[in-house]
Image (cartoon, rainbow, N blue to C red):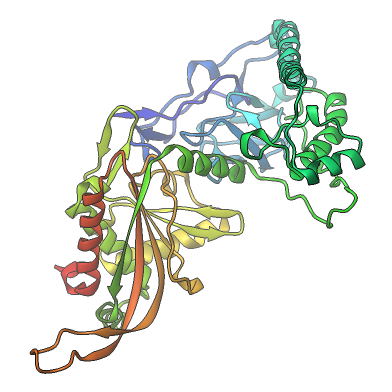
Length: 485
């Protein structure tokens, strides 16, 4: 079942009459993006007169550009106040938890007011980002437009949570003092005395809550940041945050603090959650790749697009998934979703971090077709021009670090996917073949070998399923002609 991508919450811009356009819609299969029929703006974005003094307009909210998105970062505006827009125009770039995505208009109008300027960070879903009108003559009426005026009661409601937050913050400190004894490492106690730090106010990260020197340093840094935060206004998403100089602590080496992007922050949270909550197990196997390398060399003499080893591994992975369908599944909480085709996520390192563009239905494609698609996806990934449907989704992931010369890679599963394959470098090794008869010594030869490791979610795949998949994969790699049948 498909569900249309709807804008969530409050408006972000004002727009003219809807003419309809192709919107992306996410299927219930986690992360997969597909095209839907032309859709209208939701009712919350319809023509309205928010105040009697304002002309007919639309308020555009920060749209949900990813199924797991909760906040966005306005990295660039392509339109200015007073600029006309037509359906299909990208008005700004929004950095989501997955990548930077263009906010594409679905109707014509004129940008009357930009509410979230370039550089606005941690903008929640549904936050108004702009106002759009039908006629250019109405732009001037929104010069002093403020979205807060439409929700005055909300300001009063903020006072109560503030008091509650304060009491919650004070409670742990009081409980710490009541315990009396504070557990701390000797080095931490000495460092605390030198810097006049009350250990009862420090939260320990060591075994049993023991306070370490690093905990005191983190506490000192947080103390220096509390005052500037208290002085700043609560509503800070509408203006770019200025980086603060790092705190200089005596005895510590010089350092530089690198601010996390929204993508980095969410990726870190998801990987931590996956490692802590998903019961993983790992299966590794060595594969001889001499026949695979020979076939690749022969194909590249006639292929219009150069085929890489990774392109052939993608094909082998997809066919192995068809042989062992449980590996091409997702954990959905109260049920397991099994997919008919294999949408292969391919890990790509970019200047902004790791991203996994998707080769759709890789099991139905040949080597050359896979090579063309992967080259295009990798180029777009590094340029930051991937569309949501090109990286959101996937049913199985392959991560190849062979170019770094490593002997083994054991990656972390990306939920809700059940499996991910880590690929190492190709190495020359001595192989002992079986002797032709018992009276002759076993012959030795040099072979090109590669170790692959399959990480599995044990809630979906059991040990036998993981082992069976690696055997099917090994069979295809060592007999690559089977992939061409």
